[in-house]
Length: 223
Image (cartoon, rainbow, N blue to C red; front, top):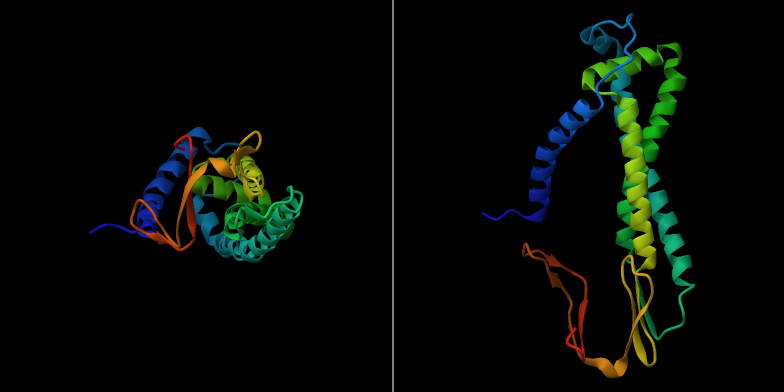
């Protein structure tokens, strides 16, 4: 029986996450553990409630943060689209596109806010709590957190740039394309168009139907 994209993604995540965690533990092993730190089992009993609160708190906070960032990115996209040259019809990146960087940025921001809250609430016990987390996960969480924050930030910045850069404009005498990461507009006179096909849905390679109208434009040079 063929798997749908959701099931395939869940299986891939279930396999990939443990492998990635093992790799991070090898690259960034736990270190700088104070000699006064107790055993993991004893610390777990002491910090179990804190761990649950500081673990689920960022996930709950990420939801409203994600919506706020999504709204901010959509406003940025709308302001950028208003700067495009006049055209009969303009296509720009859709609203759902901006949910991807908003979600990841919200998780990063919520995680950093959780660290700030942990420092403030635990006070002098924070180093011991951090040492417990390092021992439990067998990795240097501070360095891993820095790496993930930087990586996600850079990836989201590229994603946002690509979304702002993409556009298609139908002018009176030409079809103007600006693809992802392109260095400029690609202009095609309307006289070069030999045919346009359209359909209200796209059938993905896995057989799923994506309900959005697609256009395939054929030019005189065969493209």
